[in-house]
Amino acid sequence: MTRLDDLKAKVNLDNLPKHVAIIMDGNGRWAQKRSLPRNFGHQEGMERVIEIVECASQLGIKYLTLYAFSTENWKRPKTEIDGLMKILVLYIRRELDRLHKNNIKLNILGDISKLPELPRKEVIKAIDKTKNNTKMVLNIALNYGGRDEIINGIKDLYKDIEVGKINYDEIDANLFSNYLYTKGQPDPDLVIRPSGELRISNFLLYQIAYSEFWFSDILWPDFKENNLYEAIIDYQNRNRRFGGI
Ligand code: FPP
Image (tube, rainbow, N blue to C red):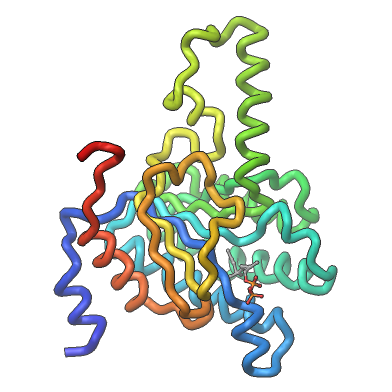
């Protein structure tokens, strides 16, 4: 029996997290350890994206969110940003047919109007092609920032109040969640952050109020199916109380 078989036997399919969110960190360090340029780490990270998407959807996860590019990542050198955009285009070109065949719906969290034209067009094409798929929603956070998301949500809500679509008294946590990129989706049950960093980095700030966290020293390009199973099994052993007793 392999380690993966062992983990597959342990996972409780009746208590899967509905929504798993991952901060894919450590690509740069992975490359640095091998004296390679940082973009090699991102490229290897893309291979893990392909594997983890497949694994999560086969397992029965309904929502998978991957943090690919933050609003702060524009501060990186142009060569790295260009490399990341190329990898995004490559990913979509390589994987779109398979995502569609596997009934996965691609959704973007973030403002894609600011992306360069080619990745923007590829992303829009992929969203359109997969829009009616139902097995799993794959959210890719692209040009995403949690504070930006909340502020944009407040602005949109304000407009709806001004035109009389919403009454001030109706505003509650549930209503406000409809003004976020994750509108209509359950909050993440499990947030995974590899690479040894213990912070949230402006990721899904509103939605993670009651999420369980799983941290690990593994760098994202080394993150395998085993690690996803380990995180989920750990999650299944947590006692979630949502503020109750
Ligand atoms: C953080 O690692 C990672 C990113 C900023 C990019 C994540 C992108 C990918 C995995 C590429 C493929 C993605 C898709 C959706 C096709 P880092 O560069 O900050 O690593 P470091 O902390 O070791 O420097």
